Image (cartoon, rainbow, N blue to C red):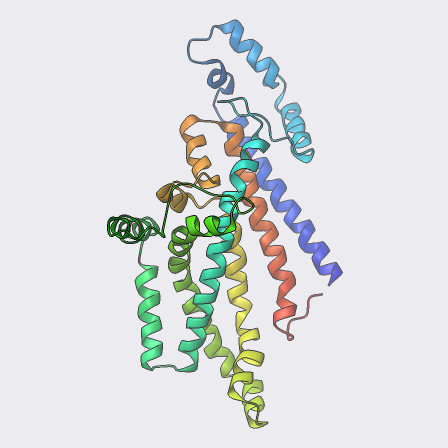
Length: 319
């Protein structure tokens, strides 16, 4: 197990190095002029030269690359070209919003998706199975932005017009400040993400459960007289969750990188909103940091998923 994790961590570090290098090539070697972005379009040649010198852009590319890696290893992500604020400060302000949205939505879609998938697998080709299939197809074909707008229309505008003011979308309240208000402000964004994504997990869980329930060891467990509940949840579900766990790790890592559509629909000041703002302003240090951060989340999530395989399925051995 230790050797396996060491290999996976080493491989993850190589992947991150490749990502960091590609980002450097795209944003530092490709034709662009960060000095012009900082100094403004009306800056003279002397001002541009001074800005390039301060940024180290007048140094050879290999020297810039070495300094770039050194800053990353020391946690220095640079400064925003627009406001001059440290990029770590910007990310520190926005990350709790995206993390709250991603974790809450992930828990909801995991519960809905796995529960509905198990229900459909236990009763194949019945009304329950067809209902779960219809649910999955409906929400899978629903664009996230459209579902979010429908939630705003029905649960916010229409209910507010009728005097029911439980649902709100007025910004973000910190969990440490008021846990109840934190959840109330995020419940609509959570279900916007969860219902669209749960459809994937429902079909994935159903297919995996049907495969597992046809295995010899499941028939043996039933022949020994074990209860159906124990056969399903103790023996079948654990093995069936392996592909679900793989998908879950990728999805959560991607979500933490920024839930762009949902954050913009509900006006949440998270990483997704910051990505769009930085692209519009051509704020390269912030864009670079967010790309690297999203890649790191995905790599770490996949390492954790690989380590959990053996916990869920005893047949898996990590060597």
